Length: 481
Figure: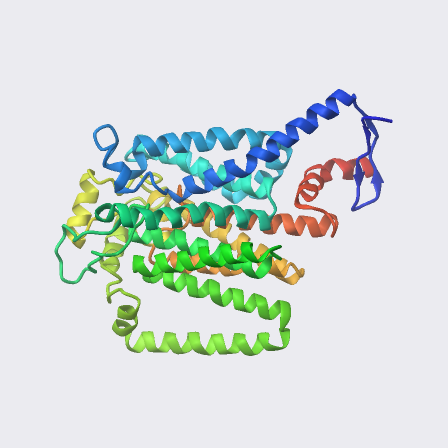
């Protein structure tokens, strides 16, 4: 009969009631599905570009908005517009899959609790308007992660990330060529001999060299995943991804970001370990032992000669003035230990506290330069506990995926989680709005959970079907009884 379809629960063999619908309804649904399918990719790429903070934070554009915007780069009118568009475009797609979204929210309680605490922190924030604005930005960040995780499988997500970051790669080179004064750091206004001179470092389409470096490390991660974990159908596609990978590495070098170089090395090491697991398991243990020996050697050298290692990484014994900053931040945390000063309420350029701290350390401070300190400063030990729980759950999911034989997503997720936590030693990478690393962290955590659900409900199910079954499992269990 035309317009008739059946719904089977593949994992248990329970046959669901047959539903009859009109042909016109089926055609209408097909048209809607076709439209959604055509739009979801450009929307996803746009969201990835927005979450990088690309273009809108660059002096090339922000100087034209200085008269009507805020001195805070994340509050300029152009950035507010693209964040609004991000929510406007992404929210309808999430609502179309409301059942799946509800399951993802229910399965990621720590992520939901963290966002709820951020919005509640408006009540006690020292700058409620700033906290609210950045809460909205954070909502757009998490909405993007949920959208990508529920609309695409992990392979397609990596392709979306690749395309979005390739836009920043191409335009960073263009900006450096066309606007060198704005796209390359100029001599600092703060003149202190013990602070790294960043003049000459590239920042491309971003506001700072470190932002460029960290975005490019996500590009390196995505390209390595695609080149090693996905079977590409043509030589030209492989060549394109190799070129994007080379572009990311080149920009990291010109950005002179030591942390980004370390992260890229970690991701490369993870890709090698993955290839060994896939194609040469007999050498996996040997390579892992070699990596452990090299890491231990570097640790011993660092403990004996920290100045030499830090100079190689382009830093100094104070980690570019961070150690003095951390001492001050710890004192501020002690003043408000439980709930903090309000989410992202610190580090405003015209705020008296920020000015005093910048004067004390000798450079303009944009963040605490430590992920855990930044979270505790804004949300107190309560927020810190939620973030640590979220990270622990995510790591455990990745380990379970590895144990269950989901080598690709398990290995790459675990490597990324390790990388972002190492990065968090010197940069604020956890629970940040418009931070592509945090977007990918949430995506991988969700996707690992979906892989485990897929294994539970049926080996041959797609991500889409796994979400469907996970969402209706409680109902079906009651029906079975």
